[in-house]
Structures are given as C-alpha cells and as structure tokens.
Length: 260
Image 1: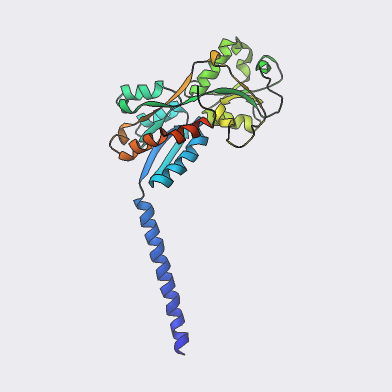
Image 2: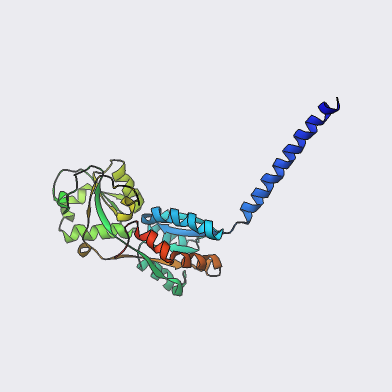
C-alpha cells in the first residue's frame, strides 16, 4: 500500500522538476544578448552562416532582417530597432551618416557584388548575354531600381546595351533582389538580373544558365556596413563589425562570389 501511495507523489515531483528546468531555460534565453541587424537581400546566404558562427563564438544572437536597401533605409528613418546595417551600396550608409542616423567612423566595405543574367533553363542564357536581344522570353525580372542597388545596376546594363526600349514592356520588378530571384526560380520570369551570390552556394553546382555581366556595363556594387545610432553604445555592434572583418569571415563572403 505504501508503494502505491508514493507513486503519485513521484509524478508530481517529476512535473515540478520539469517545470523548473523549463523556467531556467526561458530565463537563460531571455538573458541572451541580441543584436538587431538590417541586411541587404543579396547577402542572405552568407549572413545565415555568419550569424550561426557569431552566436557560437560570442553567445550573442544575431537577429537579422532581409530586404531591399532602400526599404530598409526607410524603416531605419521611421525608428526600426536596427543597430547595424549591411547595405547593398555605399550611398545609403553615407546618407544615413549625413543624417546622423549612423556612426561615420564605423563605415567600411564588407563586400563587392556582381550582377548575373540568369535563367532556370540550362542553355537559355549564352556566354555573351545575347539572349536579351531575342524574343524568346516573355518576362525579364529586375529588382526595383529605386530601392535596390542591383536593380539600378540592371537598368544601367540595359541602357548601356541600348536595349531598354526593346525590353521595357517585358520587365517585371521585384521589391528586392530576393524577390527577383524568386520570380526566375519559380518560372514566372524566363530571365532575370540577380546577384551572383544568390546563385553561388559553396559546394553546390549552379542551376540553369547565366551570364556574368561585365563590370564595364555598370557601376561597381560596393556594399558598406555601418553601425546605426541605436547601436552606437552597444559593444556587441562593435564586436560584430570586428567579427565580419576577420580573415576567415572575409573568405566566407568571398566563397559566395563577392570580390573585385
């Protein structure tokens, strides 16, 4: 009888211990430092791996939001709680510095991007990009040139090749270079201008066919990072910037197709 009487008490004790463990875990998670970072959409692949490494080595959770550089800038101006900004250009961080929304001394170039013309169909895009001159496609995807630097670069290419008037009616715009990639990946556009980093996944072969657009056809896409005013007094913001500048992190970024 005594044994039967104590079994419910053991169950209650087990539940109590489980509740205590869960409470401790919740407190630990609540105490974990968090760094909020705004990240240009083209950098989605590298930032995922960088965030994992940063948290493993520092214990700081990198909470990042992806989007078009211009849209992220608008969010920052409206008070979004970002502490660091990884933009897809140099102009936007410089503008934020001039507006006193960012710390000028923290600005540096963390990547240089390259533009690709891409199709999911193997053999669709030739080595010179002459497919743009044909009528073998119905849609050409580009990122919004007003908010996305890669979209602005794509427009430069079309104007440089004197093709804009011919393809204007075929253009569909993505809110960001991330959405542009999705247009092509889903088949909603046969062709699209994307960032090389979106097609470069270390250790995997590339999908479809592409043309790496010559640098002579568009302005260099130098991407700058900057600490925002909200992160000016957060040591984790400085820690993250130094982390990005490490040789192994620079090599990781390069493995996604960034570089001169």
